[in-house]
Amino acid sequence: MSDHEFDREMAEALQNAEAAEVVCVILPIINQCLVYDSRSALDDPPRITVSAPLGSGERRLRHVNKARPQMERARELAVLPWSGSINAFSNSKIWGMLQDRMLSSGYQNAERQCNDALDELHQWERRSMVSMIRGQGPFHTIWSRTS
Figure 1: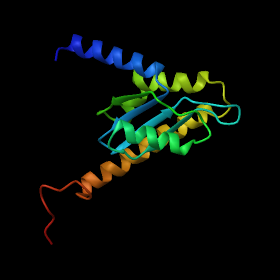
Figure 2: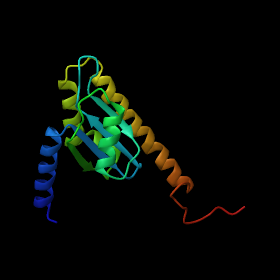
Figure 3: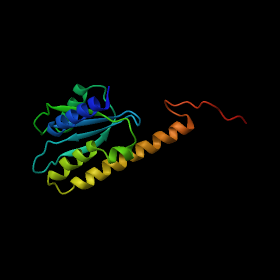
Figure 4: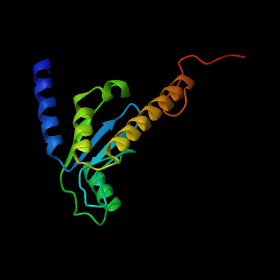
């Protein structure tokens, strides 16, 4: 795929995500997802949270709807992959779009929710790096220490 094609497809994915009720950013390096649910009511603002992957878009929508049964059922889901670092993600157009959507909702705690979600992603990345260095979880060391 050429750079031009990638840029066009990314622009199209972002456009779809800007309009979707629910956006799920898959972060396979840390085995987590950033989930934005734009639905809101007077006492129930939009949400941005970190969650384990669920395996499919259908499962993600069921999970989002189950978490907020008082809301009208979400039917639109945009899924965006991110394979880079969390620092790079925090400077990306994807994060900028999600942050803008949260902040433009006008709810009091929108900025704090964004900061908390980003902090949690950084913590997951740090734990993942430590596991990688130690050869724990899905990671294995190439050389083992001899005593």
